[in-house]
Image (cartoon, rainbow over all chains, first blue to last red; front, side, top):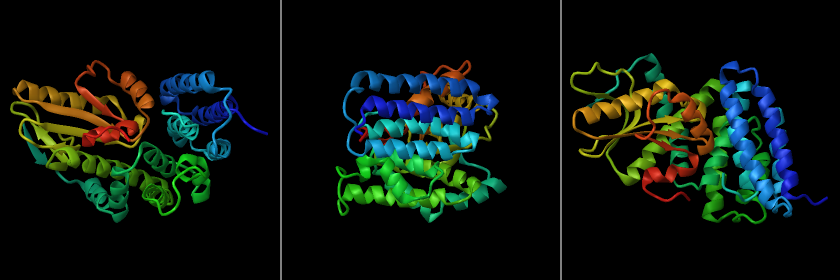
Length: 99
Length: 228
């Protein structure tokens, strides 16, 4: 099945939510976690709005699936919150977008 | 304004060995000439769970996919070398990995700054007349007359904390009070978007106008280059 950029953004956002749930026990970082959700959610949505109907670029579908697996493997809340900054950037790079 | 060697304590002695490790030197050299996506690869792998190189090649199709430069091309070879060095860091225990990552960001900042200006120093204190001496050493300094700089280096945006911002601002104001000038800033190996939200929350009463923020996407600015 061919994927669109909107499909892949939806999967990246779902992986991002998994990281947020893993990071949630870090009570002292709740504000930062919320800020990351706000700014990165908006940036990913911006790409979906602009290019959502386009076919996914070569290699990007496998990239986002592997990225989902990486996010799911993270169990440590500290690593998860650090990855909340990294995952969107990596997903955007796979889609040929700047951060 | 005077620069001095930091007083070495036990932790600093241990950390000095990490700073001098050949893996830190190699990663610093590779990342200094890397593109933004290659630097992002290093950040992801060094902070990741998987230590399987093929997994990371899949995640970065623009570096390793069918439309990426082929093996033997200098860009592809650099991507492979960065992946290998990053996996070596990731393969260490959590505490050691964390120390290596910090040392690599400092080594990278040192190399980039040295391209633009110099001489560049590491772990230096800054003293001002009539002010209590700061114990805090700055990670990287440029001690050029009329063009002094002090930078703190962080692996991630979460390293941006109120005390770090305050110390940098204090040094900047100290230089101004003496009629001099000191450029101060943070070098953060993380996304600018994340650094900015962190900085705004952590700054307290410190004005941000005098503080430079160099994030992962803009590291080449340290060298006086446009981001690759």
